[in-house]
Length: 433
Image 1 (cartoon, rainbow, N blue to C red):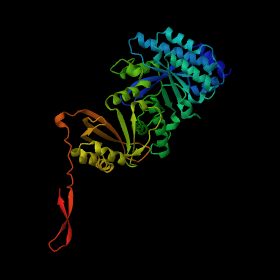
Image 2: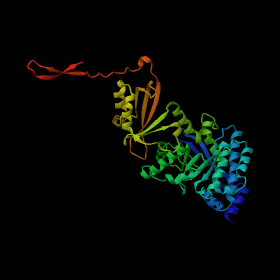
Image 3: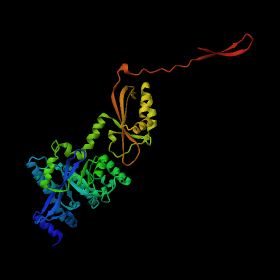
């Protein structure tokens, strides 16, 4: 009997059982989601790992049968949580690219999920990066249909295939799962750091959640936290486990709020948006500065995340040009604090930021009290000293607070007369007017 026939018989005997591997939020150490995985457990207890049967099934349409089998198992599991008054958790399900050849894939998925009264947003459909090239146009349409029906999409095993960010930029998805092979590197490797920066910068601009897969060491976990990766899946937290074990683990890691709260279930696409919206409610623009290279660019809310890099200009020139708008009595403090030299000196002293509050006149002729906070930040890809500047308008100045213009002394006018002396000499005499 071949592998495919064995799998068919095993599914009929329901020997395929779900195992669960949690994904953790590295900031809270709480479960963010869980991936459901197929394990083939024979009647004698022998466990057959996916590496034995998945490649064989991928060569035929039988992989679709396993997918639908696991989708139903996921719904049964979430339904059990509900019936036991345990908050439901988002669940990731692997989906073969061969579903593009099926008829009514989306409607069938909706029918199964709805039959268990599971909110669509709790289902995360994982599509492997390697399958995206098989029929890219049709797959894009399928993913768009899933999204329009409220399901979330994850690009799985990113970095293990031949895809480029230019290609996945055309896809509508929520989660970027970075393949474990990307992390089999030394965290001090410069090329590795550059690759990671590109990926995480891209995910930030797309407002995607990033899931780092296969993380096993504290060193790599700390580095991912430094990069801003929020979600980790790997042995450093948990191995895949049977349902009963997972439920006990899940109870230990419940958030103080219900798992279905919008801040968790919608976070993959919304958390960056929420943060950016909050920042730009207070700060109308944010300045990014490279103190080492004496450069800066300004990003405003409507530009954020578009992928269009603003023009880079001279930071020293900007500061000089802005001096005229600062009240004369505040100019020395303003310049000494915010000059490139002043900021680098503060950075070298070990300060985390510099702040200055000054009076400034706007283009509308109104004087305001403003606070400028420059926060030093570090990128793992470069040794340059970087800073982010936040500009906050505190209030308009009262009439008695407005600086009185200082009139420069006018030069005295001289009147020149030609005078004849008693001796008959002619001289020129300057007199004050």
